[in-house]
Length: 291
Image (cartoon, rainbow, N blue to C red; front, top):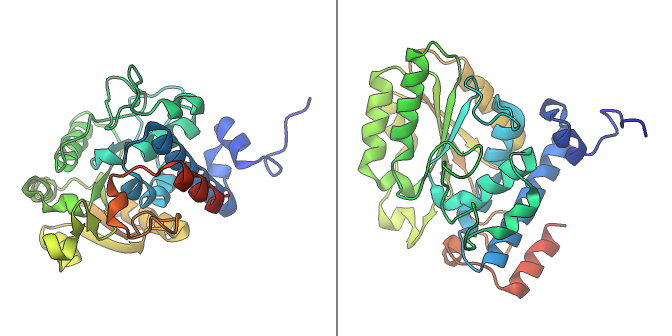
């Protein structure tokens, strides 16, 4: 049987063939929807997990893995790969779904989430899972780790770039701002932070718990190049990542405005689904919406 032409390939065919760059805008939307279906299915099967903050960052991670990052799923430790650090480690289902779709491990393994002896635990473990750069769980530490990796790349004369996804609620942590100061001080222009700015955290709205405003100005005052973007607009995210690539002498942050639980109507902006799994009926409803 002859190979399908690039034009007639489905998004899954193209990903399987490792031709990420040939994905069309429609393919990218299809991938994002598939990631959302994986997130719902695996958390529903596990009976625990964090759907809200996984769903809110789907387009951000889709843009990174299928457009921006230089990576090789068949060679996860390739020294010249770009690094992606998931600081908000409770969004592990999103990273697992993405890595599986890219070919780092079988998609079928996703349904082992949080089960005994599974590699896919509730927070990422870099010792177990190919493609995971940092073991996460305690919030506030990913940006510090990413600064170190960016500095290591400079010392090793590597041209890889480091991308780190942090939650907005996570920015309550003082360590985030210590890392922000260090990144600017050392002029880590190979470092890009992306903030999943969905406005909600475990106990409610950020503005009621620890108001981050004026958020963009804070990052700018700490010496960062700042970009604001609709975090569900794949074209806008592409443009933001392209823009920060040319920034020299300072780190960059992309403030991505998102909706917690995006894509599933009864989960959107609902704080209950920060860390609550959908039941069987809710899984069925969510998957129906995501057809």
